[in-house]
Length: 206
Length: 220
Image 1 (cartoon, rainbow over the protein chains, first blue to last red):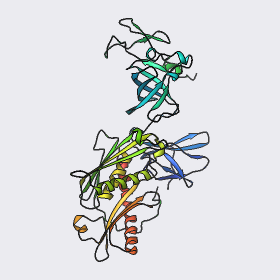
Image 2 (cartoon, each protein chain N blue to C red; image 1 turned 135 degrees about the vertical axis):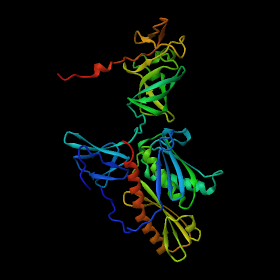
Image 3 (cartoon, rainbow over the protein chains, first blue to last red; image 1 turned 60 degrees about the vertical axis):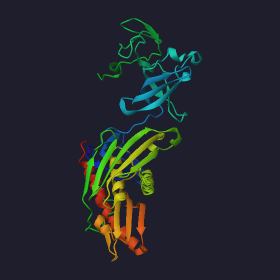
């Protein structure tokens, strides 16, 4: 078995022995450790990621990777149904990864805001069709993923005015709790997400 | 990256011609159409997808296998095949990676000219590889028969299978070529069974090589 180099284009299949496992060689994504060796779990190419003094052996799958929401992930979801106690939604993206199929999500009244939880009115926070950013909570509900928007950066990011119909112009946020239609100037209540521009996240090295 | 089990005991192994078309179905996450000689099977994988509440498992993915015969409704034999393939897949797939989800495997029989179970297992394995489902190991199904003169014939066609005393279908893993599943029919003694096992184990190496060949042809 030849050594796996840094820029290895080695193609492997599940169950293929990749290398010995020790304190400096660690099984990363797409691999598992068994009896002192690292084995592949996916059909794809082997990559080695250096971090400090450790080498992480990873296998990158061909095509789109299989991904499911886990606790702590920020997801993009579309509101499908709103009532007094919770809002139902369908999860369409996990981070920047677009899903082939949606997952059901549930946003409870208590998880909408971090403060004044008892004063939350669901219909003043979300409407069917709104696109929201939410964080996945550790699951207690079996049938669907529980979501939370109890952060400044989470909440409604895209919403259409009720009067404008399905082909309307997206509303513009004017405060933490209101959005306004740029055409009709109608204001509607929403739990607005603070959108951080991507350029603000890039730290320039002088 | 050599074989984990050393050199095969049988260098003169003759399997029927293996042909595979990768992803013939566009709407599935992974699919494969495999022909072994004149036996043909198409397998598709969907998932991980949302699971029905009654089938939900908190710590593992739920595996649903559906076997569809060439014509008519599934019989008891087809249900048995379905169950065997499901248990093989549960052994191979890392279900703990995707809890509260469902992985659906659909197998459509196209032509049965002997060795259908082995062909179905191999087609499912290729579909899982193409679907990007994480697995502990790959599996290879090999079919053989026992003839009247105590001869073991590897991967026979339908003509050779007519007068067979016994049929053996073995499924091996790619780690140490351990037996994952066995299906036998007919009369045989332990020595004949061991002979069939040894020959089929050696032949499984060719199928694992075929998997590697198919995967290496895929565009990255």
